[in-house]
Length: 164
Image: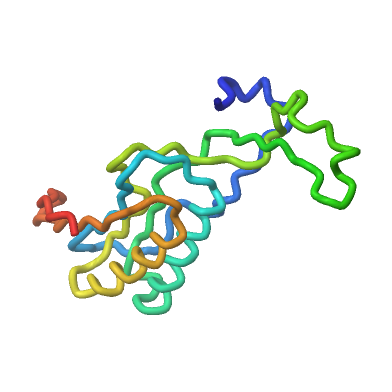
């Protein structure tokens, strides 16, 4: 069960996701979203690994001005871990499950089914590159995902695309 208030925690882990928005594209025709199929807790290390993997492909193939990558969930949930000794003779030193509450180790984002994890704004001519980057990012996420495409209309409106 997660903590209810941050004031109760003696040592809060730092957020390890360095940037939540990357790229500098101004005009784009489509939005590609990476959505989850089931509810899950996704650790911040997995979010950062997915962001780095997607950004590497997008930046090398499209350049910084060809896309905008946005990581949507923010890791709020503090995860605890009861660390056990794993060396030889640990059974004589360890207390086992006695008072096994655990210490805060990392943060996670709580994601509901169908929520987007990442979105990439780009032009339609770069569709294959964007899908390739999102597929690579989905391999870093510990839950099944799918890619959804939305085509933008003329003045800021969104034309709903089909999930792929």
